[in-house]
Length: 135
Image (cartoon, rainbow, N blue to C red; front, side, top):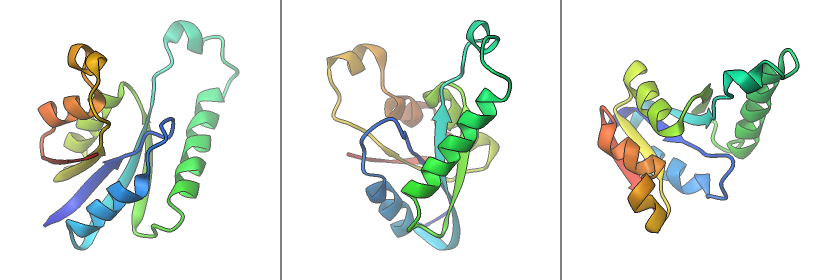
């Protein structure tokens, strides 16, 4: 079983996070660390310069609050919010935090996914650890 599990959660999609968390709990060892991660898209520098001071920190705080609300019944899950491109950021976070399994939700691929690639597909291809994909 796994000791350090990462569960990426896209708050801007209508996916049921309870299934991914149930999977993470099912494959975890006793006392395992489970982290729910949301990746906030980076704001380009040419846009960031026009934002009010502290806006990005306010955005992170709001996303953390939303994650806490979403996960209020999951007391064994820690929360992290980072910025970047989702596919790259999830893989980098897993490497930097010695994650041994990523539980990622995926939708059924459409035509655009075959040309552009989805976040889940990128994570599967580049993750430094095991990846469990749920649909």
